[in-house]
Amino acid sequence: MRAYLDSNATTQPLPEVVAAMTDALVRGWGNPSSVHRAGIDARHAVELARESVARLVGAQPREVVFTSGGTESAWLAIAGTLDAMGGAGRPAALPPVLVTMRTEHSAVREACEALEARGRVRVAWVPPAADGVIDLAALDAALAEHDGAVALVSVMGANNETGVLQPLQSIGERCRARGVRFHCDATQWVGRMPTALANLPVDLATVSSHKFHGPKGVGALWVRAGVRVRAQVVGGPQEREQRGGTENVPGIVGMGAAADAAAAWVADAAGRERGAALRDAFERAVCAAVPDAVVNGAGAARLWNTTNIGFPGLEAEALLLLLSERGVAASAGAACSSGSLDPSPVLLAMGVEPRVAHGSLRFSLSRLTTDEEMRVAADEVPACVARLRRSA
Image 1 (cartoon, rainbow, N blue to C red):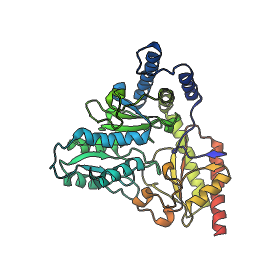
Image 2: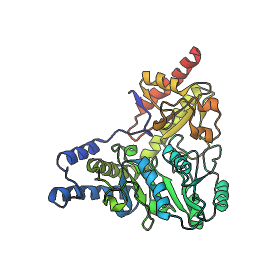
Image 3: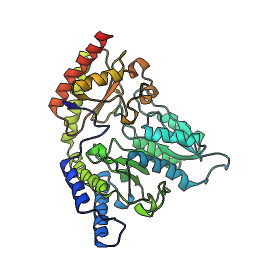
Image 4: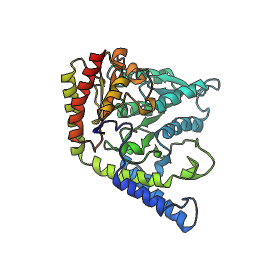
């Protein structure tokens, strides 16, 4: 690719990550639950990686539960909370309430919908404002309406499609005031911004390795000390009986290496400032060349690496294919929704007009993104838009 701008879907593993995983496959292949030397060495590698992830998120190692990725972590947070709480604190005839937003990643949004369809929960959907930020007055109303019945509030830190940041402190304080647990999908935040979960009013947080230059297929759930979740993958005592199954040692080791590199990178604000400057310059160039382009979520604070631009009257899929032919990688929303002809439910929930949502693309940078990649994209995006409009 001439310009890879799909880093919210996945990032390139770092060379040190690949080297650490290769070593774990070649030399550290023991079962970490075994008591012989090979098993002890594998266990040591897992625990070192746990310490690295804990440092990255500003927590204690014993609070980190390794999983297969962000989606499993979100399910463990939500379903695990429901199972751990049982029926305490509400009438027996009523299922508990989950409070969330329709702008959440499908790992949360569809989990809530599935649990509601099974009769396990009632979901209270809190609307966002037009910029994608949660309506705190509506959150207050939902918590008051379902007082005593809310099992969990789940709101993401940084939106995967628009980069819009949510006021986690304000949300968490409201949850604390009512004794409600707060889960944050921090998948897009961790590894890109300084993180100190222990200092936030958050109880559970989702982390995914491949969003910060680690391997796919491995993630973590941060569970604050004293908070209980019941294992959803059973059949073994691994991960302090919170997630059964032999640990993915090479993946966990790779995640640890990626966490160490990310922690060093986020400690210096210069990298984030450079990335934000590249993103902003790209937005200005595209909007100057395509005057009716719309930057979705532009009125809110956003993650430095993400922009979502709508091109009214176009189909995102056609634009993506043309850009790909020209060597530019982007997306029309979450990677797990790729191939859908429907506009993004996140954008529709924000009130974006369907003719804009249908033609909206997400461009997401990483700390490896170059000036040349952004120059290529700034040239190719308007050219491809113009070509499609001519053909239409």
